[in-house]
Image (tube, rainbow, N blue to C red):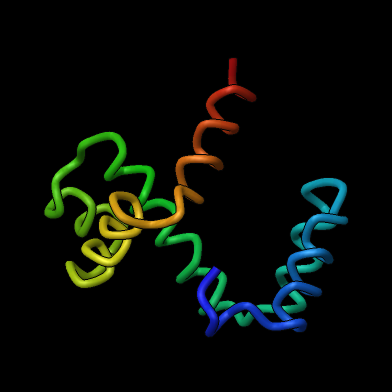
Length: 98
């Protein structure tokens, strides 16, 4: 983990997230901790990541999500050179669908 985000407060928040038991608790927690714009921004990045994994073009992604090309590039960089966080989540979602 990067030094910038490896703090006791961040670790406590992650531990708190791991205690959430269901979708209702996730909704309640994230609606309390994030602004509407923060939630929409996070969900937009997640949608962009999903579409990039599906090999969609930047133009398609921009048209469907409203994300800027800078956001798409940032997410693409995370998918290709990040810590594999997106991959872990998408693989688990795929397993859950089966």
